[in-house]
Length: 354
Ligand code: NDP
Ligand code: GDR
Image (tube, rainbow, N blue to C red; front, side, top):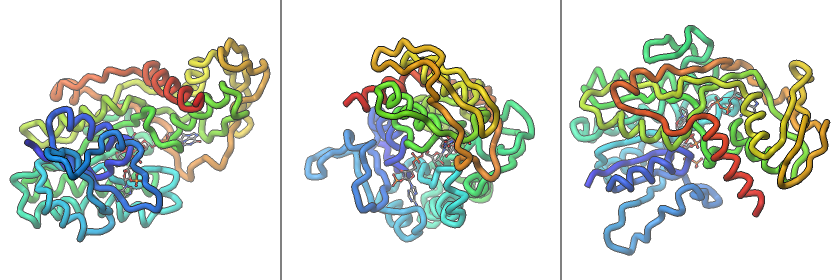
């Protein structure tokens, strides 16, 4: 039975990946941080009683800022595959916590690689590093592929740039199977509440149910290549099943503005929103309403811009070129953007109907 170790198992991707690996017969180990309240909601359904026989889902306390526990856990588990998904993953927050972000997202990656090397696991353990389209930052060329130059635009992206290159360096220096998945934005009903898609679907569901008046957002013009997290964890697994260690872009190849995502989410609950004004004065107003849940009067302002959500330096446009992953991995996403929006809206309407 193959053993996998997942850092960031309590996050969006960690939860989907754990499900996928369990379904493939793996023994799955995860690293979770100690917190004052239990924060394992995304993986509680996978919990197995350690007192039973044949347990295949095992959690370890740990933190990517602490080399000692990383070494101990890797030594204990002796994993065949490590998926390094743990990170301070919020771009805007990284401007407020730049040093911590560098420690966890940058040096944390080194800690994993170095632990595998020091423990003599180079031949045995394959390592997946969660790299990101944020590396491309300020647009150099589109669509962005494995050969497009990087220009990171946030402390998060700069930390991830270190994680990317230290992974490449350990691969080349020590012949390790250490690879980067350069994943473009991927979302789901399990997405953290402060990322823009989930913030939108939660707010739209609450507006549709008469529980909230307005949604405040930052840059409505940003363009993102959004996919579904379920599809993207499949790609992570495929990347580690290859004979040759290589880096891959995972994306849909379609980009959409934040404003359009808002429109699509409202349309799911029968509310047509029209945008007017510009910059900080832009508003979204109800143009028509056939909402089966709650009548929102025509002309009601449901979206406003709040400059507090602007970033000191923004990534305006991301659009990925998934040619290599499609041809070499045979990876094909099952969800397009309308299907993703539908999935997220259905889940949030259900959540707030309760
Ligand atoms: P989440 O923010 O949902 O999850 C992050 C995970 O990392 C959580 O389990 C979190 O634990 C854990 N974590 C945070 N800090 C530490 C730490 N110091 N030590 C150990 N674990 C820590 O992110 P996603 O699931 O969306 O993303 C997974 C990875 O992929 C991240 O590295 C992210 O940067 C990267 N990525 C994500 C993309 C996306 O669109 N989702 C795109 C490209 C890359 P806790 O639950 O305790 O907070
Ligand atoms: P991103 O995702 O920064 O791309 O990083 P996020 O959803 O936070 O922002 C996407 C775009 O939307 C704009 N935006 C807002 N964003 C947030 N969070 N809140 C708002 O109110 C808002 N209004 C507009 C942003 O300015 C931005 O342009 C995500 C994370 O998952 C990273 O970890 C990952 O590496 C990248 O995706 C790929």
